[in-house]
Image (cartoon, rainbow, N blue to C red; front, side):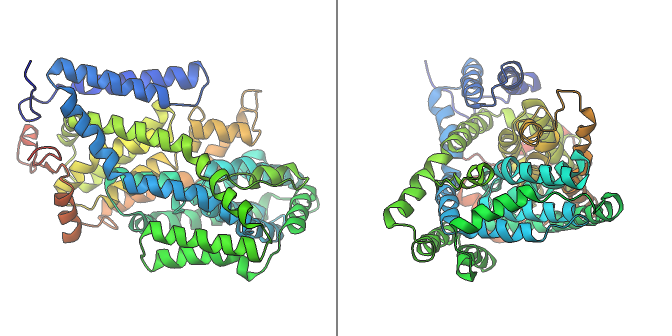
Length: 508
């Protein structure tokens, strides 16, 4: 049987294009909600098989599908390397005392009236440092819930402040897996992606801060103060780590190099090396232990369970779960793209969307919708990121607009969906007791102001044509060098069916 070429096979109809995605989402739903197992790897892998099987029936052969699969993974190779470095940097930053010092002095600023604002800032600092919202929520966030209860603050307000700060940090940290995934799937630079998120994220955080300060000075009774949990953790930290300005060097290095627009990989590795030096010469960690922390993560027994839960993490091995998930999700997106399923879906959407405002709304809501249906924040970034990238290129806009859009619909909205992996973790780890009848605590969704305000601001910018950069000549040349797909968008007087894709990454 002869092998069909990519160009000889017509695009699938909308039903066949959506079918493999719908089947995959259905399997994800069974895995996540019926079995209660928040590991989407196997359903996604089966989704690749189903996509390939449907494509085979349409005339594609494995060689063609394999090219699409590996093309996307190859584009994301740098992000995969960064994720491995992230594992090392988390372990080394804790060993050097950088993260413990941030936590220690962050706790010192807590007062009853400023508690909510300080909680958000503290969680943001820790999440930026660690690059993980889930860890911040499940450790420091849980401790803050106890403090908030002592202050007499409703649990949903404390949870909202924790979630706002933790997921802000996850979005803006160069160490975050989702912050690396978004530019990887859209073909943009990590630090350029972070800078492009500032116009939406900073105003959203400021608005949230104003809200929390207002609530703090109007709802909190300063006479009911319980600082026991804070004192226990700060005492454990001060007893096991030396704190001075040298300890902050690793954080200063990585953020200084980011401002100087240095490449991400050498910047992060420089911070790892500085962290090792601080751990050895300031904290007195033996060389062999310091090197072991890079592989297996930091390990300590302070006698305080909250401190131990926060500190015992990191290392290359800790990244295995997310790396395998990213590889499988990217492979699925690559096959869907190569077999022209994404092209059909995008063209169907583009028949009604021909402005940057409509495109920003579509990509943000698609990421949010994937979060809502599939329950997985990583898939909500990976699939829309590949799905809309060719449309943004066709309109001549930088895919930085897309990477910001999918981060806002993916990373920031995931904790606000109770049955999403992010939302389920928030509800369980913060002890909100929704299943026990405390449904009023679902108000944390509205109290997490920074999370939902950021995509609202982003869509508002698109409506007024602000902070939506056009593609530079350098970026356009990069599209050509990477053989990226570019959709030719019909003008307003043309038929939608005239939309075409001008190039394929796999055809010469």
